[in-house]
Amino acid sequence: MEWSFMFFFNSVLLGVGLAMDAFSVSLANGLGEPGMKRKKMCGVAGVFAIFQALMPMIGWVCVHTIVRYFQTFEKFIPWIALLLLLYIGGKMVLEGIREHEEEEKPGVGFGALMVQGIATSIDALSVGFTISEYGLWMALVCAGIIAAVTFVICMAGLIIGKKCGTKLSNKAVILGGVILIVIGLEIFVTGVF
Image 1 (cartoon, rainbow, N blue to C red):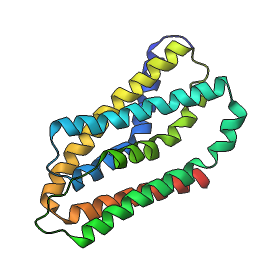
Image 2 (tube, helix red, strand yellow):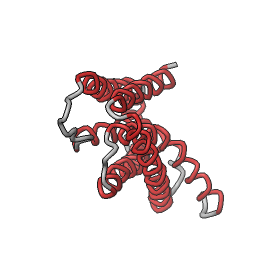
Image 3 (tube, helix red, strand yellow):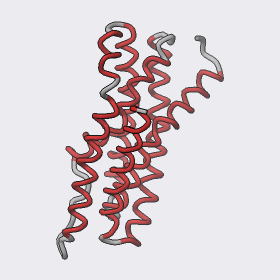
């Protein structure tokens, strides 16, 4: 593959496709924490962008080194994503049902954000197969474009979620949790069937 308009166009399309799960989770995070500050929003979107760029590069390295081991692992990806998102979503639903009145909710923490980053980007490992024909620099540029697109899309999700979260008040955490559970089920169903 050579440097061309199509290379950049395909990289942007890959970024959009991969960022949809992260967008939905960002939406849920914005719903769950309507008072989220701009700095934290950039951090959340940045984490998703890093994971969405890192996973295809790990897949690319696997293709160029240990392909047969990765192919064995690939069938577990939907299960892992399902379990991680069911855990986080279920926890959010329970917190929303318990309704801690007058207590300030901390929002998405670092640990939960890392789990969300892994859960939403683990399917991007297989993108390493589609970009395996790229040289190292092209693969890195592609990963950078995917990260930039993911960052923008996740910021949009957070902004939309915050606006809706303010209107929905304490029911937003439950809705955010349900969204995460649905995303986990969708990843599982598409990955297994």
